[in-house]
Length: 438
Length: 147
Image (cartoon, rainbow over all chains, first blue to last red; front, side):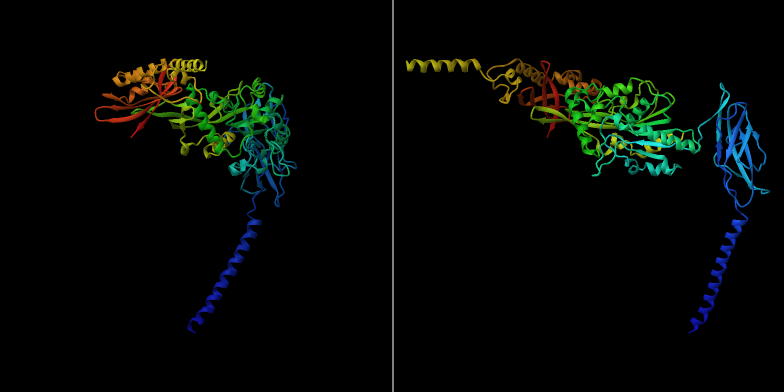
């Protein structure tokens, strides 16, 4: 009974604390909404064309706000605005616009807002920069670094559009500020009612929707303050689909960066007879053993079987009519080309009597695409990024019906940068992000 | 008349057998499903291939091949030479004191197999040596250690 006497006052105290806390939270919410309200961060918008006589026009949003706002527009020579070349002073415009006088060269623009009479200034998150075209003496916008370009992802021959999601690219890019609607997963074809995906027709046919997709994304980019360009990230055959677009568009393809991973620009030797598989000086028995091992490995591990009779595969055979067409003319020099590829450096070992022989290292590309094919776009100088691993493969004699031959034992546990795996590696994903954000 | 025909037939069969002499390497080299393994020393005629193989085996047995890595390298098949350099062979070279042919070579088409034993200072190993007929010469295609 003694315990119940103490219980009631404790309950009352707890209730009192709880009511007090609720009142405090309500008061603070009200106080912060009325007194501590910050101005909405204004967004800068460039005006084009801008006058030729040394002025740049700046337009920004005038967001609704309970209290009246005043604005400050500044032009500086550096991102930190330590060297201001012109500013508006605090203004209360009816329209969010102002003209600044600036010198030639690169300048940065920012807009600040504060409540009238207030002290706290909120600067725009977007600080537009512009570059003066010295010859024409008119203004051109530089890349607005804070407005990322939409990305068109183009999968490979045995792939599907949503492979990019499965491989973590959606998560990676949205996690770095990309709007999901700006990440376009290009489809080679429509899925039919049975869910089948007919994706191995002629490459020109596969690329037919690319112009309208890119045009649409360019408009979105421009509308959001960008320069109206897209980036392309393409895997394997997807790079040739992208190049088909570049080859077909004569004026401005609207592509800033063209990133290829393991694209066979000069074709796939894997599709040729085994004795032409690699540009290596091996004897016929070792060539055949190597081709058998590599083809066997690839067929066993690829996600989906390739239709070797399909038109797209026929076009990948070196010196095909398609490859001749796409390589006969250099693509636009205004595009940044970045080629990522796998390069397996393999030494062969064999035991001869009591001696263990080890060969020099030979490049086998990513097993499917040789390094030369993955790094050569005739007429342009791309930036190349090899992903290399060194391995030792054992050559062993093997008795067969015809007599003897060789067997090559691949170092399977350490095979990392082979064709289909390359795009899945986290270091490759990071590199693509780094290239696009650079 | 019948007796004459019988005698003539016997004579023809005899001549035929004499001319065939045995199964030579050149016959086997042309392949065919009817090829038989041939053991050196058991044929009644020696073809150029057989003679060359005998010479190689003799050189090996006498130790002249294993006297220098260069000699072994010259005996290697074009596949091995295409991948491994002479310098690589020299790297791990251990002089061989004595070579013994454990089993005479067996020849099937372009292939021959022999079993040899190499004795060095503290070591003794048996190997199956596989030869391949390349451009008119027998070349070492591979070796397999035997226990």
